[in-house]
Image 1 (cartoon, rainbow, N blue to C red):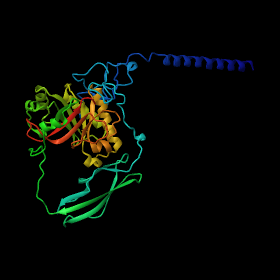
Image 2: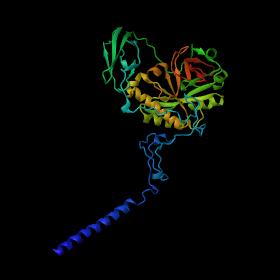
Image 3: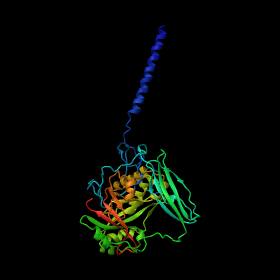
Image 4: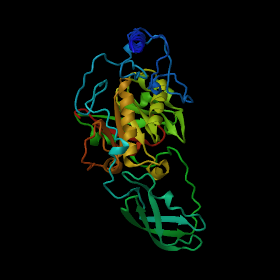
Length: 419
């Protein structure tokens, strides 16, 4: 019996010794210094905002041996560029945002998927209640209407009625839009099939035969609180900016380039326009022709824009110009999505030290854009006196202006210095 007790005691003691040894090993391993410098790669997730990244790059990581794991900041975004006129502080001038503004109160107004609420029926962004087509041609309603829903990205379109394009006549039809929740909107349309006119539409600026002269434009809109100017693209062909300035023009906003059919491009007039406009002593700004459908495309577009801009000093916010509302349904977007695209553009532009603004017509400012960032608005409304009720700092008053130094029609703009 005594031998049995001894064996039990020795067994218990052995277990205790083994447990102690195991505890020491575990303690040693967990108390080792895991906070020392790590010379391995650190991922930076926001590489789309880094200048020089090839457009074909799909990876979202960049390796660096200079960063330390314990010192890795929570925000790893890197500004895409620093403009020549970027300030070191975060000053602002007013609620509309100012050139050089760095810390707007609400630059991230992106709406998440879970927060998208279907509040309204689908809407026609562009509609024609009377359509005229040539006899014998194909009729496609999508050539005449553009539409969207606040949440549904694939709105159902149905036509009640028939159109015989081989017979001249008037054909009444009803176009119905229906979203996923069953909300619907109707549009009554008359389709007129007529004998072929044989006319050919030629795209371009065109030789002015009417419109308004800059002299008359000055008489109507030049005041103590206004500055008058133009906006141009390659359609204005060769421009004599010395003559433009001598005519009384004070600024020019030019198209730097855009995103079209999935590709970035630089307006072929941009380089000479910005060089010659600055040489003539005009204030300058740029706009971006946008057709992005998501935030990642926007980020890559801003990267491209900033690379072409190359730190150029600007006198105006960089304008975002999304116009393809006739084919909006082809982009697979909803109203939240397009506003998120502008929000992304605003964030990226401001991260680079510039300011941004949204250019759009009265119609789309009232039906599409929400301006969650409270950025400046560049209003397009071709009328002698706009009745747009929202805030705007610049008004594109006509697209058929005539000014010395430009052989085509050109847009005239009124900037309000106190807005």
